[in-house]
Length: 444
Image (cartoon, rainbow, N blue to C red; front, top):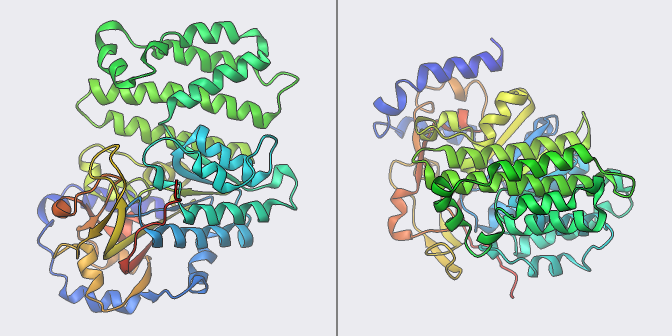
């Protein structure tokens, strides 16, 4: 039975029964020794060799994180990414960040015209909360390494660094109009500005637009019209393919951001979550297309976006994610999903959206959770590479709560931060740390 049929067979067998009948009824005692026998200790990047041999042959490698503020997740994703680029020729990294602002880092690592003088200059210029998520020393180190790596390569072979999220719509809005004003490809600037005037009054509060759209009408058609104008006009004589790609992607950000905000207010289902996910997947698809038919990409995102949603309680709520969509579209044999987890430590987060950054305690994981189970092995840091043996092991094929911390976090309510998951199917690899520490934000 090939892996595609196997995944869908297990999906149909497990998800009609397991999450309703088995969640919270696990008996992990017999599983601890099994996990210990399967775990590979992690001390440094050389311990990743066996995993990288497999991952390096895939079209997409998705690297997760159990929070947006943990040093070890960023540092090990950095190590994995460098090896995939150096040893296997991967073409780009796409992160859960904003297109227009992160593109300035892409300009820098490729030494493109108009690039900043350093990665630090770019990261210190970030404006949208949460600033620490990309404005940190860990990302700075990777960006400077990428700049050095790219220095002796022709532009078309330089490794890129891109944001793929739907937020930061106003920077993209401004970029579209400014580029069209300067170039006026196809003579479309005036038409595009007229279409964008629909959204212009809501610059100070996009959520006001979303609340009003149901009654006053949305700008959906106008923003789609700008994308079509740009598509039909093409790059023209004075614009490179790279510049045109940047322009069109900014127009797509504006279009999909409008949909995300509008659905967030008007719908009481998972459509806003899924619209954001589908845009991020679209961006990854477009980057693969940009780099050619044999391209390979690396994605950085939260575990909730990376680990296949079909094998979590997210599936029961109707939520999709990039890991799921990539496996379906490209085949699981062409996609490699890596999750990360920790038992305890500290994290950078905010107490509410837009609040000041804090170093917060991450308490010992809840009893009965995946993290508690992994900690019971007595091992410090290790990796599990899942195969058919794990995916037919009865105890491991039950759902366990798997901790997921966002940019907003309250340690006092940590027990609410767990996603029921059938872990050997959710990921291809899980990397576990007994204790982790917070990111090192760039001082502003």
